[in-house]
Image (tube, rainbow, N blue to C red):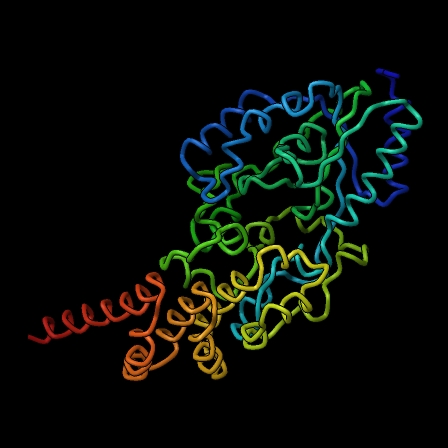
Length: 390
Protein backbone atom coordinates (compact mmCIF):
# COMPACT_ATOMS: atom_id res chain seq x y z
CA UNK A 1 0.00 0.00 0.00
CA UNK A 2 1.30 3.49 -0.77
CA UNK A 3 -0.04 6.92 -0.11
CA UNK A 4 1.10 10.49 -0.43
CA UNK A 5 -1.61 11.75 1.95
CA UNK A 6 -1.00 12.84 5.53
CA UNK A 7 -3.19 10.12 7.08
CA UNK A 8 -0.49 7.41 7.22
CA UNK A 9 1.99 9.92 8.60
CA UNK A 10 -0.40 11.04 11.31
CA UNK A 11 -1.09 7.43 12.24
CA UNK A 12 2.61 6.55 12.35
CA UNK A 13 3.41 9.65 14.39
CA UNK A 14 0.64 8.83 16.85
CA UNK A 15 1.82 5.24 17.22
CA UNK A 16 5.41 6.41 17.70
CA UNK A 17 4.45 8.72 20.54
CA UNK A 18 2.27 6.05 22.14
CA UNK A 19 5.32 3.78 22.14
CA UNK A 20 7.41 6.41 23.93
CA UNK A 21 9.32 8.13 21.14
CA UNK A 22 9.79 11.85 21.72
CA UNK A 23 10.09 12.93 18.10
CA UNK A 24 9.32 11.48 14.69
CA UNK A 25 9.99 12.76 11.19
CA UNK A 26 9.84 11.57 7.60
CA UNK A 27 12.52 11.81 4.93
CA UNK A 28 13.07 10.72 1.36
CA UNK A 29 15.65 7.91 1.08
CA UNK A 30 18.44 10.03 -0.35
CA UNK A 31 21.11 12.41 0.87
CA UNK A 32 22.19 15.60 -0.80
CA UNK A 33 25.43 15.82 -2.75
CA UNK A 34 27.03 18.01 -0.08
CA UNK A 35 26.60 15.28 2.54
CA UNK A 36 28.12 12.70 0.22
CA UNK A 37 31.08 15.00 -0.57
CA UNK A 38 31.64 15.61 3.14
CA UNK A 39 31.72 11.85 3.77
CA UNK A 40 34.20 11.31 0.94
CA UNK A 41 36.43 14.11 2.23
CA UNK A 42 36.26 12.74 5.79
CA UNK A 43 37.47 9.34 4.62
CA UNK A 44 40.06 10.77 2.22
CA UNK A 45 41.61 12.68 5.14
CA UNK A 46 41.72 9.50 7.22
CA UNK A 47 39.73 11.21 9.95
CA UNK A 48 37.86 7.98 10.71
CA UNK A 49 40.96 6.50 12.35
CA UNK A 50 40.41 2.90 13.46
CA UNK A 51 36.80 2.94 12.25
CA UNK A 52 37.73 1.15 9.03
CA UNK A 53 34.15 0.11 8.34
CA UNK A 54 33.35 3.72 7.44
CA UNK A 55 35.53 3.44 4.36
CA UNK A 56 34.48 -0.09 3.42
CA UNK A 57 30.77 0.83 3.61
CA UNK A 58 30.95 4.37 2.23
CA UNK A 59 28.80 3.65 -0.85
CA UNK A 60 25.96 2.23 1.24
CA UNK A 61 26.45 4.92 3.87
CA UNK A 62 26.10 7.67 1.28
CA UNK A 63 22.81 6.32 -0.11
CA UNK A 64 19.92 4.64 1.72
CA UNK A 65 18.85 3.08 -1.56
CA UNK A 66 22.27 1.47 -1.93
CA UNK A 67 21.65 -0.11 1.47
CA UNK A 68 18.14 -1.29 0.49
CA UNK A 69 16.96 -0.61 -3.09
CA UNK A 70 13.27 -1.12 -2.25
CA UNK A 71 13.10 1.69 0.30
CA UNK A 72 10.70 4.52 -0.52
CA UNK A 73 10.64 6.47 2.73
CA UNK A 74 12.61 6.74 5.97
CA UNK A 75 10.87 7.21 9.30
CA UNK A 76 13.33 8.82 11.72
CA UNK A 77 12.64 8.35 15.43
CA UNK A 78 14.25 10.07 18.40
CA UNK A 79 14.29 9.66 22.17
CA UNK A 80 15.34 12.36 24.60
CA UNK A 81 18.14 11.56 27.05
CA UNK A 82 18.55 15.07 28.44
CA UNK A 83 20.71 14.63 31.57
CA UNK A 84 19.17 15.57 34.92
CA UNK A 85 22.43 17.22 36.04
CA UNK A 86 25.30 19.11 34.43
CA UNK A 87 27.31 16.40 32.62
CA UNK A 88 30.49 18.48 32.98
CA UNK A 89 30.25 19.00 36.74
CA UNK A 90 32.66 16.17 37.56
CA UNK A 91 35.47 17.67 35.46
CA UNK A 92 36.34 19.72 38.56
CA UNK A 93 36.61 16.57 40.70
CA UNK A 94 39.68 14.78 39.30
CA UNK A 95 39.45 11.86 41.71
CA UNK A 96 36.09 10.94 40.14
CA UNK A 97 35.38 9.59 36.67
CA UNK A 98 33.44 11.55 34.09
CA UNK A 99 31.32 9.32 31.85
CA UNK A 100 29.35 10.60 28.85
CA UNK A 101 25.75 11.31 29.80
CA UNK A 102 24.30 8.76 27.39
CA UNK A 103 26.34 5.97 29.01
CA UNK A 104 25.45 6.69 32.65
CA UNK A 105 22.16 4.84 32.28
CA UNK A 106 21.34 1.50 30.74
CA UNK A 107 22.17 0.58 27.17
CA UNK A 108 19.72 2.59 25.08
CA UNK A 109 19.93 0.19 22.14
CA UNK A 110 17.73 -2.39 23.86
CA UNK A 111 14.85 -0.09 24.68
CA UNK A 112 15.07 1.83 21.41
CA UNK A 113 15.17 -1.32 19.29
CA UNK A 114 12.23 -2.95 21.09
CA UNK A 115 10.09 0.13 20.40
CA UNK A 116 11.29 0.33 16.81
CA UNK A 117 10.26 -3.29 16.32
CA UNK A 118 6.80 -2.58 17.70
CA UNK A 119 6.35 0.36 15.36
CA UNK A 120 7.71 -1.60 12.39
CA UNK A 121 5.24 -4.41 13.07
CA UNK A 122 2.41 -1.87 13.07
CA UNK A 123 3.53 -0.44 9.72
CA UNK A 124 3.66 -3.93 8.28
CA UNK A 125 0.25 -4.89 9.63
CA UNK A 126 -1.68 -1.69 8.92
CA UNK A 127 -0.12 -0.60 5.65
CA UNK A 128 1.20 -3.91 4.28
CA UNK A 129 4.59 -2.24 3.99
CA UNK A 130 7.94 -3.93 4.09
CA UNK A 131 10.27 -2.50 6.71
CA UNK A 132 13.86 -2.59 7.92
CA UNK A 133 14.94 -0.95 11.16
CA UNK A 134 18.30 0.38 12.32
CA UNK A 135 19.82 1.55 15.60
CA UNK A 136 23.59 1.86 15.07
CA UNK A 137 23.54 -1.52 13.32
CA UNK A 138 24.14 -0.56 9.70
CA UNK A 139 25.91 2.12 7.63
CA UNK A 140 23.15 4.71 7.99
CA UNK A 141 23.96 8.42 8.13
CA UNK A 142 21.37 9.02 10.78
CA UNK A 143 22.14 12.64 11.62
CA UNK A 144 21.77 13.95 8.03
CA UNK A 145 18.59 11.90 7.67
CA UNK A 146 17.24 13.30 10.93
CA UNK A 147 17.97 16.81 9.68
CA UNK A 148 16.16 16.08 6.41
CA UNK A 149 13.23 14.75 8.43
CA UNK A 150 12.97 18.03 10.35
CA UNK A 151 14.09 16.73 13.75
CA UNK A 152 16.90 19.27 14.00
CA UNK A 153 20.05 20.38 12.23
CA UNK A 154 23.65 19.28 12.33
CA UNK A 155 25.55 21.80 14.39
CA UNK A 156 29.14 22.90 14.00
CA UNK A 157 30.08 19.97 16.29
CA UNK A 158 28.48 17.67 13.62
CA UNK A 159 25.88 16.38 16.08
CA UNK A 160 22.14 16.88 15.74
CA UNK A 161 20.67 19.88 17.56
CA UNK A 162 16.96 20.16 18.27
CA UNK A 163 15.21 23.36 19.25
CA UNK A 164 13.20 21.33 21.76
CA UNK A 165 15.74 18.77 23.00
CA UNK A 166 19.09 20.47 22.45
CA UNK A 167 21.91 18.05 21.72
CA UNK A 168 20.42 15.14 23.68
CA UNK A 169 18.67 12.82 21.24
CA UNK A 170 19.11 9.13 20.49
CA UNK A 171 18.25 8.32 16.88
CA UNK A 172 16.94 5.31 15.00
CA UNK A 173 15.34 4.69 11.62
CA UNK A 174 12.72 2.56 9.91
CA UNK A 175 13.22 2.11 6.19
CA UNK A 176 9.93 1.25 4.48
CA UNK A 177 8.40 0.59 1.08
CA UNK A 178 5.51 2.87 2.07
CA UNK A 179 5.62 6.15 0.17
CA UNK A 180 5.29 9.03 2.61
CA UNK A 181 5.54 12.74 1.99
CA UNK A 182 8.86 14.01 3.40
CA UNK A 183 8.83 16.62 6.13
CA UNK A 184 10.56 19.95 5.62
CA UNK A 185 14.17 19.95 6.81
CA UNK A 186 15.15 22.10 9.78
CA UNK A 187 17.20 25.23 9.15
CA UNK A 188 20.65 25.70 10.68
CA UNK A 189 20.32 27.93 13.75
CA UNK A 190 23.96 27.98 14.89
CA UNK A 191 24.64 31.46 13.57
CA UNK A 192 28.02 32.85 14.60
CA UNK A 193 28.23 30.73 17.78
CA UNK A 194 31.32 28.54 18.08
CA UNK A 195 31.19 27.44 21.70
CA UNK A 196 31.25 23.76 20.76
CA UNK A 197 34.39 24.25 18.67
CA UNK A 198 36.28 26.30 21.23
CA UNK A 199 35.56 24.03 24.22
CA UNK A 200 37.01 20.86 22.67
CA UNK A 201 39.95 19.77 24.87
CA UNK A 202 41.84 18.10 22.00
CA UNK A 203 40.95 20.54 19.18
CA UNK A 204 39.17 17.86 17.20
CA UNK A 205 37.37 20.30 14.87
CA UNK A 206 39.58 21.43 11.97
CA UNK A 207 36.71 23.67 10.84
CA UNK A 208 33.04 24.21 11.66
CA UNK A 209 30.98 21.14 10.70
CA UNK A 210 34.14 19.04 10.33
CA UNK A 211 35.38 16.49 12.88
CA UNK A 212 38.74 14.73 12.93
CA UNK A 213 37.65 11.69 14.92
CA UNK A 214 41.26 10.73 15.61
CA UNK A 215 41.49 13.71 17.99
CA UNK A 216 38.08 13.26 19.60
CA UNK A 217 38.02 11.98 23.19
CA UNK A 218 34.89 9.95 22.46
CA UNK A 219 36.76 8.17 19.69
CA UNK A 220 39.94 7.76 21.72
CA UNK A 221 38.21 6.29 24.77
CA UNK A 222 35.66 4.12 22.94
CA UNK A 223 36.66 3.25 19.38
CA UNK A 224 40.46 3.36 19.56
CA UNK A 225 41.80 -0.06 20.45
CA UNK A 226 45.47 0.68 20.95
CA UNK A 227 47.60 2.97 23.08
CA UNK A 228 46.21 6.49 23.21
CA UNK A 229 48.77 8.96 21.79
CA UNK A 230 50.74 10.73 24.52
CA UNK A 231 49.88 14.24 23.35
CA UNK A 232 46.15 13.69 24.06
CA UNK A 233 46.39 12.14 27.52
CA UNK A 234 46.66 15.25 29.68
CA UNK A 235 43.82 16.91 27.76
CA UNK A 236 41.56 13.95 28.53
CA UNK A 237 41.43 14.92 32.20
CA UNK A 238 39.13 12.50 34.01
CA UNK A 239 36.99 11.64 30.97
CA UNK A 240 37.05 7.83 30.85
CA UNK A 241 34.23 7.08 28.39
CA UNK A 242 33.15 9.60 25.82
CA UNK A 243 33.09 13.36 26.08
CA UNK A 244 30.12 15.71 26.43
CA UNK A 245 31.93 19.04 26.27
CA UNK A 246 30.82 20.10 22.78
CA UNK A 247 27.27 18.90 23.41
CA UNK A 248 26.88 20.40 26.87
CA UNK A 249 27.93 23.97 26.01
CA UNK A 250 25.41 24.36 23.17
CA UNK A 251 23.10 27.32 23.95
CA UNK A 252 20.11 25.43 22.58
CA UNK A 253 20.27 23.11 25.58
CA UNK A 254 18.53 25.81 27.61
CA UNK A 255 15.32 24.74 25.88
CA UNK A 256 15.96 21.03 26.45
CA UNK A 257 13.91 18.99 28.89
CA UNK A 258 15.36 16.38 31.20
CA UNK A 259 14.62 12.79 30.35
CA UNK A 260 11.93 10.98 32.30
CA UNK A 261 12.81 7.61 30.75
CA UNK A 262 13.93 5.38 33.60
CA UNK A 263 16.45 3.47 31.47
CA UNK A 264 18.23 6.70 30.57
CA UNK A 265 18.51 8.08 34.09
CA UNK A 266 22.00 7.81 35.59
CA UNK A 267 22.70 4.68 37.58
CA UNK A 268 23.88 5.59 41.07
CA UNK A 269 27.16 3.71 40.66
CA UNK A 270 27.94 5.59 37.42
CA UNK A 271 27.01 9.11 38.52
CA UNK A 272 30.33 9.92 40.22
CA UNK A 273 32.45 6.76 40.43
CA UNK A 274 35.80 6.86 42.21
CA UNK A 275 38.68 6.33 39.79
CA UNK A 276 40.66 4.22 42.25
CA UNK A 277 37.76 1.76 42.54
CA UNK A 278 37.44 1.46 38.79
CA UNK A 279 41.16 0.91 38.29
CA UNK A 280 41.04 -2.20 40.47
CA UNK A 281 38.34 -3.99 38.46
CA UNK A 282 39.31 -7.33 36.99
CA UNK A 283 37.43 -8.80 34.04
CA UNK A 284 34.65 -10.41 36.09
CA UNK A 285 34.25 -7.29 38.21
CA UNK A 286 34.08 -5.12 35.11
CA UNK A 287 31.37 -7.30 33.58
CA UNK A 288 29.39 -7.27 36.79
CA UNK A 289 29.51 -3.50 37.28
CA UNK A 290 28.74 -2.69 33.66
CA UNK A 291 26.12 -5.33 32.89
CA UNK A 292 23.43 -3.76 30.65
CA UNK A 293 25.66 -0.68 30.22
CA UNK A 294 27.10 0.75 26.98
CA UNK A 295 30.52 0.75 28.65
CA UNK A 296 30.79 -3.02 28.43
CA UNK A 297 31.42 -2.78 24.69
CA UNK A 298 35.03 -1.64 25.10
CA UNK A 299 36.02 -4.44 27.47
CA UNK A 300 37.92 -4.29 30.72
CA UNK A 301 41.43 -3.63 29.36
CA UNK A 302 40.57 -0.55 27.29
CA UNK A 303 38.39 0.70 30.12
CA UNK A 304 41.19 0.46 32.72
CA UNK A 305 43.56 2.04 30.17
CA UNK A 306 41.26 5.07 30.18
CA UNK A 307 40.95 5.06 33.97
CA UNK A 308 44.73 5.05 34.43
CA UNK A 309 45.08 8.09 32.18
CA UNK A 310 42.52 9.84 34.38
CA UNK A 311 44.45 8.77 37.49
CA UNK A 312 47.60 10.24 35.98
CA UNK A 313 45.72 13.52 35.64
CA UNK A 314 44.52 13.43 39.25
CA UNK A 315 46.14 14.28 42.55
CA UNK A 316 44.59 11.48 44.56
CA UNK A 317 46.98 9.77 47.03
CA UNK A 318 45.27 6.50 46.20
CA UNK A 319 46.18 6.96 42.52
CA UNK A 320 49.83 6.02 43.14
CA UNK A 321 48.93 2.75 44.81
CA UNK A 322 46.45 1.86 42.06
CA UNK A 323 48.92 2.61 39.29
CA UNK A 324 51.69 0.59 40.95
CA UNK A 325 49.32 -2.37 41.30
CA UNK A 326 48.63 -2.25 37.57
CA UNK A 327 52.32 -2.49 36.62
CA UNK A 328 51.88 -6.26 36.83
CA UNK A 329 48.56 -6.38 34.99
CA UNK A 330 48.12 -9.03 32.30
CA UNK A 331 47.22 -6.40 29.69
CA UNK A 332 49.97 -4.37 27.96
CA UNK A 333 47.44 -1.57 27.41
CA UNK A 334 46.98 -1.33 31.16
CA UNK A 335 50.66 -1.67 32.09
CA UNK A 336 51.67 1.04 29.64
CA UNK A 337 49.20 3.54 31.05
CA UNK A 338 50.23 2.61 34.59
CA UNK A 339 53.76 3.67 33.62
CA UNK A 340 52.49 6.97 32.21
CA UNK A 341 50.32 7.65 35.25
CA UNK A 342 53.19 7.03 37.64
CA UNK A 343 55.45 9.34 35.66
CA UNK A 344 53.06 12.14 36.59
CA UNK A 345 52.27 11.07 40.13
CA UNK A 346 55.61 10.19 41.76
CA UNK A 347 58.95 11.93 42.21
CA UNK A 348 61.67 11.24 39.61
CA UNK A 349 63.70 9.16 42.06
CA UNK A 350 60.72 6.94 42.81
CA UNK A 351 59.95 6.56 39.11
CA UNK A 352 63.57 5.61 38.39
CA UNK A 353 63.40 2.93 41.09
CA UNK A 354 60.21 1.51 39.60
CA UNK A 355 61.76 1.47 36.16
CA UNK A 356 64.74 -0.42 37.54
CA UNK A 357 62.38 -3.05 38.96
CA UNK A 358 60.00 -3.47 36.03
CA UNK A 359 61.63 -2.36 32.75
CA UNK A 360 64.06 -5.27 32.38
CA UNK A 361 61.43 -7.99 32.70
CA UNK A 362 58.82 -6.28 30.53
CA UNK A 363 58.03 -8.43 27.49
CA UNK A 364 55.95 -5.92 25.52
CA UNK A 365 57.80 -3.47 23.29
CA UNK A 366 55.22 -0.69 23.63
CA UNK A 367 55.24 -0.88 27.41
CA UNK A 368 59.04 -0.69 27.36
CA UNK A 369 58.69 2.32 25.08
CA UNK A 370 56.58 4.03 27.74
CA UNK A 371 59.30 3.49 30.35
CA UNK A 372 61.93 4.77 27.93
CA UNK A 373 59.95 7.77 26.70
CA UNK A 374 59.56 9.11 30.21
CA UNK A 375 63.24 8.54 31.00
CA UNK A 376 64.40 10.12 27.72
CA UNK A 377 62.24 13.16 28.31
CA UNK A 378 63.60 13.57 31.85
CA UNK A 379 67.18 13.33 30.57
CA UNK A 380 66.56 15.96 27.91
CA UNK A 381 65.03 18.25 30.52
CA UNK A 382 68.06 17.86 32.78
CA UNK A 383 70.35 18.66 29.86
CA UNK A 384 68.40 21.84 29.11
CA UNK A 385 68.52 22.83 32.77
CA UNK A 386 72.29 22.38 32.89
CA UNK A 387 72.73 24.36 29.69
CA UNK A 388 70.67 27.24 30.99
CA UNK A 389 72.71 27.33 34.19
CA UNK A 390 76.01 27.13 32.28
